[in-house]
Amino acid sequence: MRPGKLLGLRVAVFAVWVATGGAEPRGDPDDWDRRAREAGRKYMSGEIAAAMAEWRQLAKDAERFDPLDRRRTLVLHNVGALHVELGQPLEAIGYLEEAARRMERAPHPGLNEAKTMNYLAMAYVDTGDYAKAERTLRAVREKSLARAERGGSELTMADLLGSQILLERGRKEEAEAMVRAALRRLEERGRPAPDEEQSLWNQLGTILSSRRRWSEAEEAYRRAVESLRREMGDGHPRTAKARINLAGALVRSGKAEEAEEMAGEAERALVETVGAGHWAVGAALERRAAAMRALQGGEGTGEAGGEDPDGLREGQPAGQQGGSGGAGVPAGPIGRAAGAQARARVGC
Image (cartoon, rainbow, N blue to C red):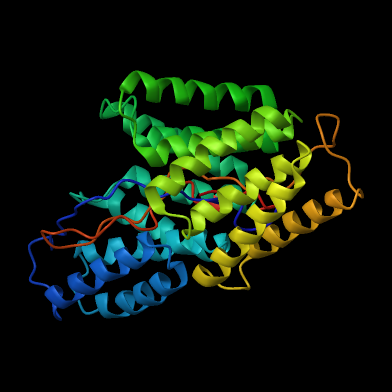
């Protein structure tokens, strides 16, 4: 399974006050908080590689703070989550496991343990360790239900990842039922968070594509793309990844010209935001090539077509954990994610 299959979705922005466990932080916490907010803004605008560079430097600088300072946990989460976003799940696991251990050992007001565990589950799924992923998701559900969060974003993220595991195991009907049930919960909740809705529609499109229901998959992907364009803009990498998925369904539905144009736009946006070497750029190029072959009459289209093995998945709600200071750091890589990522199933 190609790293990056479950690329996470943006989560809601969390304003986080990072306390210091009673000890005065060493170094300059105000400057660190300001830079963390800037790194969060870069993440939210789609500058994933630039955000990673910022958080790596912030990780080094956080070593000057007291060992109990919550900034040190925050930076572990965000560096790990960004590794997931960049299709590097093996590198992510150590950071996320340590962040989860720190939150288990001591309270971290303002930081969301379930968000970190969902990202960890994403990394496990991306590396094929479904047993660890399932154990982690069970813990997420238990913690969320214990807090009476029966319809929260972290449960949505857990359902997205759970449906991914079912899909990988060939249990497609169960995967579809899980996603549709999550969509119904969002409707019942009223005014659902856009990123949750986007992730679920994208995942539903991937599942329907795997079942060769191309016209239904096209409709689901369009809903994800339209919502992402409204919320994040045409140039954001998550919008681009959802467009790649839609392009695949369009080829199968006999709309190769629209598919070729859409895949080309996605490729250009991804090169600018995550770099030409990112695996999703290759997925966009594959979609363009498939569309061009269809235009030349070299590839079958329509409902009778074969299964599309390359749908990009939204991992689930993704997003960074917020930063420190009263103003908070925009949610970046942690979160709604399901940020995790790869045969080319893209997550937005």
